[in-house]
Each structure stands twice: as C-alpha cells, then as structure tokens.
Image 1 (cartoon, rainbow, N blue to C red):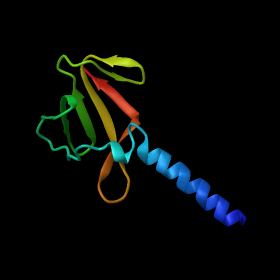
Image 2 (cartoon, helix red, strand yellow):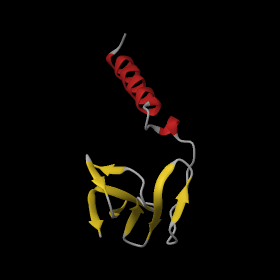
Image 3 (cartoon, rainbow, N blue to C red):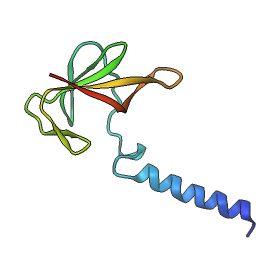
Image 4 (cartoon, rainbow, N blue to C red):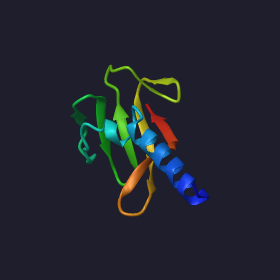
Length: 97
C-alpha cells in the first residue's frame, strides 16, 4: 500500500471517529440560530441569545458549567469572525453578573 493511500485511510478513520463523537456532527438533533431575543431550545438548558459581539447563556436554575466551573449567572462568549457568519469562542468567555 502506498504512503498516500495509508495517510488517506488514517485521515478518513479519524474523521469518521470525530463525526461519531458524542459531541460530533452526527450527534446533532437540532441546528438553531441565536437571535437578540433570549430563547430556550429543546434539550439545551438555560436561556440563550446573542448580540453583535457575543453569545450569552443564563442558566436560570439549570446546572451548567464552563471549564469545570459552575455557571451561576449570565455567561458571555465573545464571537469570533470565522468567515461567513460568526461563532462563539470559549477562549474569550466572560461571566456577566
């Protein structure tokens, strides 16, 4: 077997494993876009919304954590420009109380 074929098979195996991960793309049950109006979503605890700069979650009594710490108030996640649209960056999260 050539090196290229082996590398491609390794990549494919790893890709399929990542997709099938408990939090991978194949685990999606709903794809919802946040708006500037706080809203709840089935199977997602808390109330979620976003503005032009950040996404937010208010646990409202639900048990949520971020990086091993409980979220007890509104949690802010700074948005990162990633091409078309924006996404939340956990590295830039701050708590808003």
